[in-house]
Length: 495
Image (cartoon, rainbow, N blue to C red; front, side, top):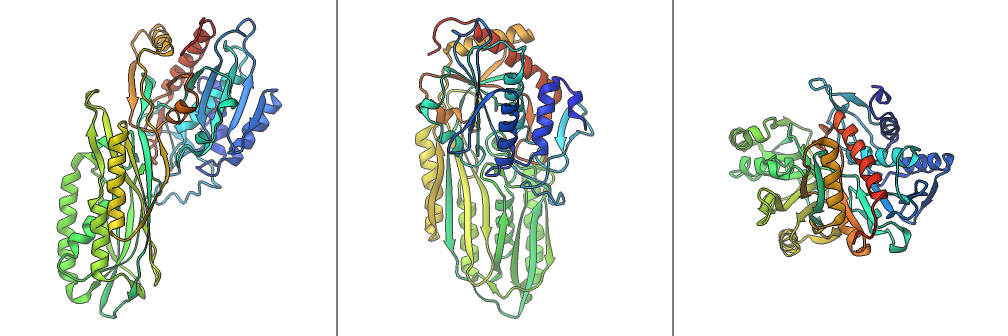
């Protein structure tokens, strides 16, 4: 569809261009180059740091030179998740936006994530710095790389690189909320060499697949009771083969630490003499899983189809011990905040699980722990590491980020809530998110910043069902413009 027909035109036009340029995590160079060339053509100062982050600068509106410096911040990358039949390569194929068939005031993509997280925030910042009508103090736009897979861009931002004192992170996902805090995170990677052995001849080979799950964001959606496809498949295999010496040849589930896996598949070998019993237990286990997920994840489906034989598979005891250890990992919602009713405090998501086939089989896993309590986060992470190490796996932590502690008495928040009330006639919900935001990494480096996070209404991020509410984008834009103008006329300091 022609996004430029939507309001505000400048924002939607930029977002259309963002969608046309592939930019999954670790592949943001094309989008960064487009922004760099665009800024230079418009006479906007632009620089690139060693990590690939972009920094754009514009002088204050005339007469507002003494106002607090404003930093608008968004990330360049998106999570690439696609339906199994989409045949989409996020490194080369554009995202194709379309109106939702049943709800025409929502925008989605054709079989993939939309990238409204954080493409709308990115487009808003670009539209703002390019506008001659927006009133602001000294302005900087910081666009970071690889937020979705470790926040490596944010980690590389140096204290002397930015001059502002107020940061608006444009990565929140509800236009009626003002976010002032986020959970801390820890990614745990596990690697295990799992020696396979030659497979016998009297085996039935099966491709077992789980699909139809909703998936979603491992922070924003973790409390909804949705199924993790890797865990569901592990349970199906264990229960189906509990009375037979079945063997695991390969396993693959999930593609990102911060996305709840929607699909998983495995190649297994079942003794021909046990096949009838295996099929019966498989059906019973599937019925139980379907009933357990109920309305929280009603689309669960699983199949077991005849497959070509593999020459290698893990021994029965090793096959079972690996999957039992996966099911022993902490999963989903773990605890709620003792201070904020209904708010998730801690969770864990097994985002990637892969066992390669062949004589030198290798198990690789990636889990993400989130918590607003650092002690509890460390305890859960240690539990995950312990489960993997009990298998003989090596573990590491590719990344971790501290929680962003809310400051409910901040001056920026007071101005933002007043501006929101004047704009909408309603009070914004002030909250902290269980998702991870780069503000948690910025706080130790920029202790003088006053920060908050805002954005349009986005649903089902990190899944092919991702959608953004079109009217909320205009509300978000008007709020951003009004808040920046009010900050431009504010006196004094903010921290």
